[in-house]
Image 1 (cartoon, rainbow, N blue to C red):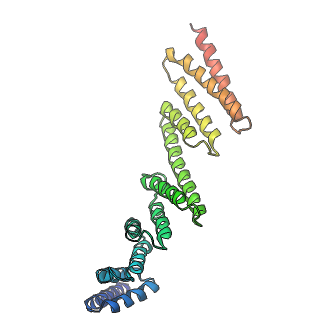
Image 2 (image 1 turned 60 degrees about the vertical axis):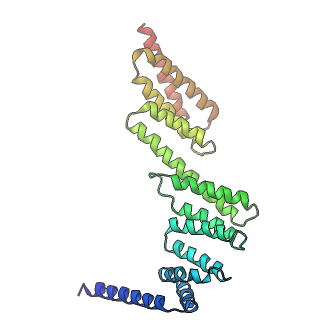
Length: 266
């Protein structure tokens, strides 16, 4: 009995394939376009896509071509084929630069990059591209109603990049690569100056550099504990109300104690 649903599914797939094949064999492009439009309205985008593609050569020099290509591009998008959709939206703009739909297509091209943006742990090439494309859209369409949404997407992408860098810095710390961790947390401060987590990044940089100083060779320890004290003083000046202030001040005391011990051993 458990095989019955599979058999039914295969039968339906076979029937659909035969149905599309039969329509494609019809010599009337106007008929095929009507069927494609029907499938598009029914959200059967895979079928609509096949038929739109088939009739495009016939309509390429006719007024209907713009609408066909517009829906053809969306067929890819609605099937979550964002890579192909981005290319089709781009091509639409190249073919119809003066279209009333040009602004929409420019936004959807950028949005297709955004939809390809992966989780923070993975390569963020498409996230960076999405940010760039959204900024270009804002710059070239200053009066667009989509600009607020585009700006929000840029901020979402920036947060994702920050999260990736943050996790990378923490990975260095947990692996005991304290110098690399200190550099990574400091880079976070410089790369995301508007972040709400700047005090945390500075604190983690201090914590990393303190551990690095502890593990340094004797002749380098004094200099590095002094650097930690300087970083702690900068923290207190910049983030006087931070929840990390007490811990930072404790690193001043610890570093001073280490310096005294080093001096007493000279």
